[in-house]
Image (cartoon, rainbow, N blue to C red; front, side):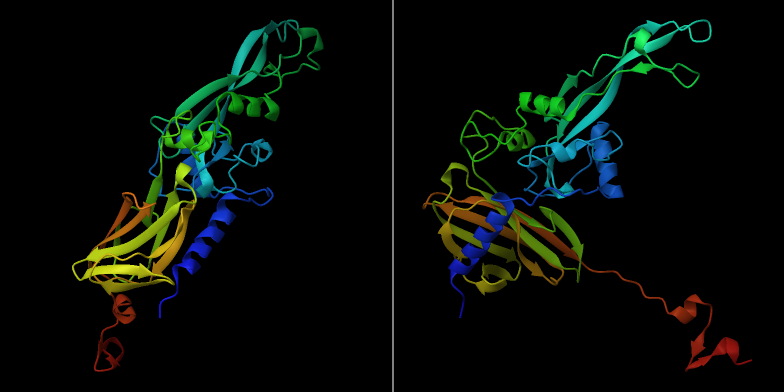
Length: 348
C-alpha cells in the first residue's frame, strides 16, 4: 500500500525550514584546495563550469588567491555563504596602491612613496558570470605624513595607509544592492536576483522556478553500475502555499515510471500525481538515490501544476553507457604465466 502524499509534503516542508528559515551560527570554515582554485579563477576573470545547484544564494568574500577574506565572517548572516555549495556570488577584493607623493628622508632615502591602499571590489555571479559582474572602489585611509612616518630604514619601500575595514566593505555591498531585501515581493532577495541576473524591481522576474538534476547535472553520462541521486528544486515565487500537484516520472524505452513516496518508481500506463499539497520553496532536495540503471537513455521529468494551471516543467537526461572495465591478472602483470595451476616460470 502506498503512503499518502502528506509524508512527502512534510519531508519537503522540513527541508524548506532547514534550508530557508534558519541558519546555524557562523563557524569558521575553510575552502578546499579545489574550491580555492575555483574561487581564484573567478577572481581572475576565468569562469569554470559549475555543477547544477539551485541553492546558491549567498555571498563569499575572497582574496584574489581564493582564500576567504578576513572580513567574510563579519558579513550579515542573511547573505554570508556558509559553504562553497551555497555560494551564488563571489566578491573579490584586490589591493590597488595609489601613490600620493613621496617623502625625502635624506640622501639614503630620497624618494619613498606615500601610498593609499584601496580595494577594488568585484562581484561576479557564479551562475551568470558573463552578465553578472559589478565593481566598486573602496578607498583606504590616508598614509601617514612624512614627518609622522616612523623609523625609516632599508626595509621600508612605501609609507602605506590602512586598508578599508569591514564596515566600509559592507557599506559598499549595500550600495550595490547585494542584500537580503526583496523590494518587489517576488520571493527572491536582491542577492538572489543578482546571481540569476533578473530585475530586482519586477515581481514577475524571474517568476516561478523549477529544476530536477541527476548528480547535480541536467545532462549526465554515467557508466553502468554507478549510483544516481535525483534532486528537485522549486521556488513558487508569489504563489507560495497555493495548491500544487507534484509529478516526478521517468521515460525510457521500457516505458513510463512514476515516482511514489517513499522513494520508489513504479511502471504506469499514464501520468500520475506523485504528491499533492501546498507550493513550498525548496532547493536541491535529494528525493531518491538509484543504485544502478541499465544501459540506455533515460529522461527524468519534474512537473508542478499550481492551482490547476499549466505546469512548470524541468527535465534531466541520463545516458548510461557500458562499463568497459578491463581486468588484468596480478600474476600476468608480474610476468608469471600460470598454466593448469602451476607457475611455468617456477617449474624449471
